[in-house]
Length: 70
Image (cartoon, rainbow, N blue to C red; front, top):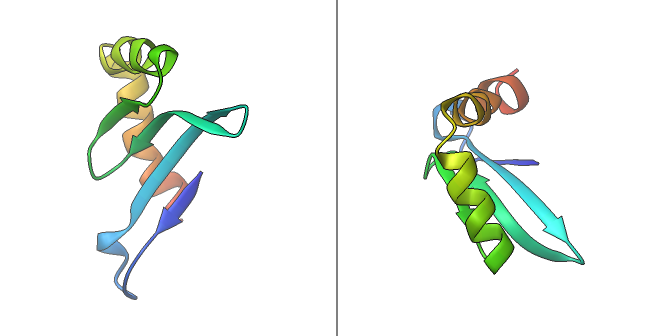
């Protein structure tokens, strides 16, 4: 997980959650995009399943507040 910001204003904070296997990013959640993006065959299928689950998306979207803006 990482938080990226370009100014002192926390309203532009971006939360990125990478899921990595063998040093490669398989799936990534970016709070700016608001959903998971898959980068491998497994990642695409996982992202599709997670994006269809409102509970998982809501939790990831809330993590920008919980992790970055605490």
